[in-house]
Image 1 (cartoon, rainbow, N blue to C red):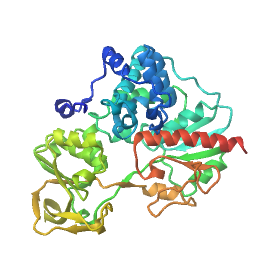
Image 2: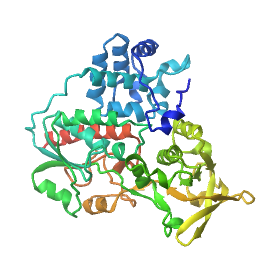
Image 3: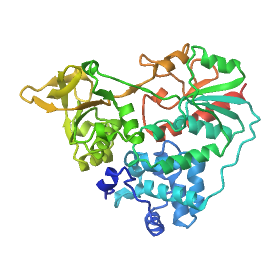
Image 4: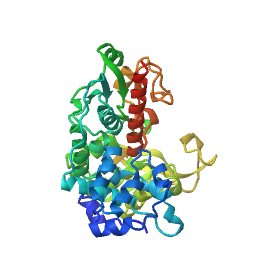
Amino acid sequence: MKKPIKRNKIEQFEPMRESMSLQDAIKESNRCLLCYDAPCNEACPAGTDPAKFIRQIKFYNYKGAARTIRKNNILGTVCSYVCPVEKLCEEKCSIVALEDPINISGLQRFASEYGRDVGIEPLQNGLKNRGKIAIIGAGPAGLSCASELVRKDYDVKILEKEKDIGGVLRWNIPEYRLPKEAIEYDIKNVLDLCVDISYNTKVTSANAVLNLLADGYKAVFISAGLSEAFMLPLFEQYSNAVSYIPFLRDIKFNNDSHIIKDKNIAIIGGGSVAIDAAVSAAASGARKVYLISLEHLNELPADEEEIRIAQAMNIIFKAGSQVTEVIAEKDKITGLKGIEIEWVELGVFVPENARQIYGTEFNLNVDLVVQAIGTKPGEELKKITKGIQTTGKGIIKINENFETNISGVFAGGDIVNGGATVVQAVGEGKKAAECIDKHLCQL
């Protein structure tokens, strides 16, 4: 059974998922088959061990379940809200051969929030006697790596350019999907480990990474993420064409609903951030919200649940379509012309592979265009990664041990994978910490 979507909660930017009651958690955990080699565990990129915490809930050990989640995934509460479980642990659940999968995300949320509410003891601090390690960026990968290294007795320092930590969790994901209480609780667990964090610290010099090694840091982990949105040349001269990054941030923190209310908004893109932008616009009172994507509806990179949320909010999908012309008055876009497309070669989702279908042209009146077609490393990252091998788009190349071509310099998260899920970033941070520890032990 698909999880219900509460439109009224989304419109108020309140969590659309209600926490499980104790009775519901007991009932749901009792459906678990207690698999010996639990496939749900294998499907969790962060190694949260759902089989163990579900078993603990089933046998009434709720504090133990909370400890298991926190120990294995420092951002376990956050992941219980935003993890695409339909593609991961719940998809692999053994019970799907008989009935609906176990609501693993709901049980993870229950246990994490139970631990928060009863006040389980903080994680034990490390001794910080095994040398200094620097981490650039305090997003999911950086926080995960830091928490693992501190518990291995390293003295960890995070350099964060923002005034607070959390990365995209804090600044871009709407509160109907991820409540701030979940972020604050998980971040508190990181801070309880006494990780040293330098806020408002921009690492920009060309030799920054090498300078950190020269200053006595035994290793550097780069997890700065992707900070610059791709922008289409078609819209570059217009003042009312923006990227999704400031758009989502303004809605979340500045409540700029007057810019959106009763307006027609066009979102360009079909991924998760495009859906977030579209739903946030609708919740802020937009008259109409169009989501224009080259991908057809069954090809969208957004998760199935995200698409269902957009449909529940009456987002108008112009899937399998391409904008061909901008209608404008001076520097203001007033409309878009577009046409439907088909693929020359199936499965190759790039503009060069799109063939226009004549006779399917359409016109849209729009007041604002939001571009959400992907993100790339910012200019500051291009500077600090001087000497580090990257792809043509600035994505850092690493080996199987998360190490770059420079000894002692490691990387993980979006700056390596090009933009994936929070849970994957957490998993990469954990694995990188293991590799850093192994590397230093061999010196």
